[in-house]
Length: 119
Image 1: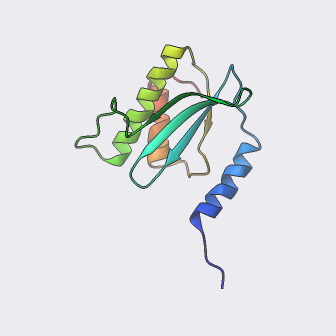
Image 2 (image 1 turned 120 degrees about the horizontal axis):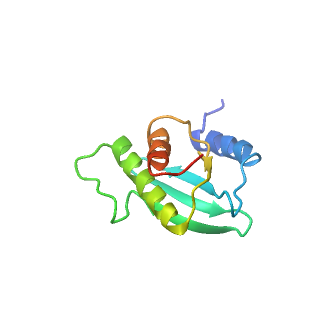
């Protein structure tokens, strides 16, 4: 009997996606991680293999009071875009990390777009 493993399936999707997506210094990669309660994003330069910017829904600058998880995700995306603008990053490549593009991941991406990132 085979048991379906969600994380294994997501990792397989992620490796398929990562074959095509690569972050350069001119266009770094925005990676999203979603847990059951929180969401986080990192902007990564794959050439130098360094994280340029990172933010989470656990960060102090994110106000979560009275908001649902989708609304918090949008705010986190906007905050990440604000930090990226300060560092001079405008264009990015979006890496959904194997997650489906809906719900919190979609809200995060829309928040980043509203903040001024282009992808």
